[in-house]
Length: 267
Image (cartoon, rainbow, N blue to C red):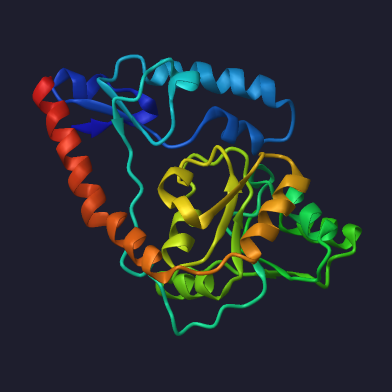
């Protein structure tokens, strides 16, 4: 059992009788949104590439519906899982800032997040933690909007225990991208007990439940309304602990292994 091979070709694994699975990590819309120029043209080209790559595979594993991109149904779900670091931290003091964690790039909805920050009626701070090609552009946009003193840029951290503390210290965590195909940051933050804000279409919304406030993707005004709701939302550490337990990697991988064994048995 394998993923698609070099250049997306499953030919070699198929020849030896292996079950070939295409793992649908992201959508054509997400890839296109990260490129300068006509997104419609990019999406059409990327979808043609997806459809060729998935043509001969036995199955497609995905969090989202891969049909629009690949013309294939999802055969097995690609599950989201959490490491043991992501759990409630009752002794960490919750701050007043809104936190973004992730890549600083054009497809992540960060211009709308800056616009929402500028339109806010209160002077809460926005902390953007991460790196990426849009960093300088976002700093300039914050200056143009007059919120440069309320927006800080901090480096990415690869230490998961530190990241969990960063989540727990925030008033809420915003994940504003319109094309999220996982939304893992939202799940991680919620498991730490922190309210999250993300687009209605983000896949992890279905797992987070009471911790999430959603908004219409691309709508800065609706994003601000969701942030203001999340900022006054209380913490339910018991519910966060239950979320962390049921979405841990042990449970996720056990369920995924059962799916893969069923798939292999049908071949």
